[in-house]
Length: 332
Ligand code: DGY
Image (cartoon, protein in one colour):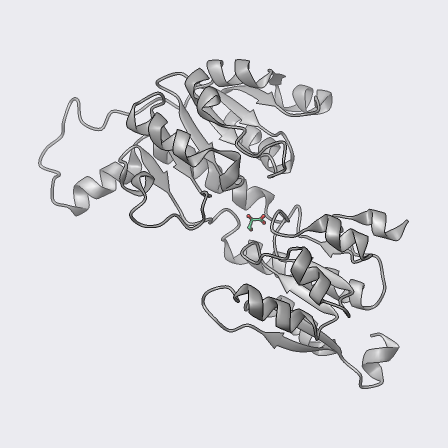
């Protein structure tokens, strides 16, 4: 424990939503913790007000930790994100102020890959339509031509972004004897050998894949990576899976692609905007399955994320290097 906390002075921190107890407990041992208890994320003006008093901020993907919020945090010394993705944070603005930003890589890889595969299988085998048929009392007999889907076994999977999660999806796909293509900004020769995956430029991957699964971070370069042109390159029988970030896909173009059957189906864990309004056309399209950003939503994974987020926060408050830092240049 740091001298400061032993001496009775505790670090003031703001936590933007209740996270699993294991992580909170660690923080509460040495900090004065103010938690936003709302079901919805704190409004921006609350964030700006709260951050002015704290030395540490524990944020979620739903919080806009932009330049204005960071500028308001005159005493802020660490931002710890309870997620691996940090696209809601202006990392450049934090770096300019010398504030380290932590995140939670690794621990959510397998859970997110599981969810990706659940979405892929669900789209391929029309699980949600099947459930709807049963629930609405429309299941009257076994139908030779009813709810026919696509084979997963032996199909071609195109992975966009072969990072930790993309590679974990590839490992699962091998169990389904899938042929795996990948596109990434850098070639990964070791993974190509280990996972028997083949590199393909994005247009080729889109044209050859039966399933296209997105696993790249949201960056200026990946914003609307899957636009009308990309969707039109896909096979009419192909399915798009997005468990990365909503804005990687142009929502308007995807809506048209599904309505006009340029592609067969989509299954989305993330959307743009998020959440999608319930009256958005994508929500009611039978060939579109949407779940509410559940990639990391298992009990164990969320607990592990909470522990890492707490460790990052406490390290920053103690002036130590964050175990998982997205802007290590602050230490140069
Ligand atoms: C992440 O970690 O970036 C997910 O989107 C939320 O767990």
